[in-house]
Image (cartoon, helix red, strand yellow):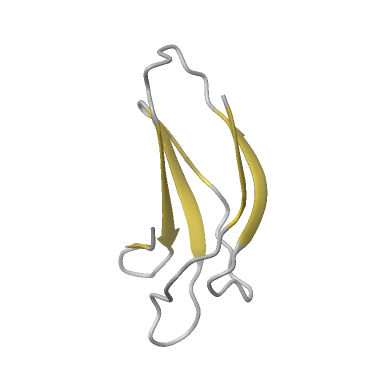
Length: 79
């Protein structure tokens, strides 16, 4: 299975000071990968344009996507 992370239009900014550093966390079964973290001028419209491949042995597994904001202490889930 190939997953392509292109861009996002987020509805809220999780940062009070500074800017968000968003990335996408993808999970299929036990496999987990994440996109690069967008650091420069991402705001609520980050762009990744990356592809990811998962080896799937069970076609009943679902793909879980989470958009996260990278923080020093703990990352915030944006969506």
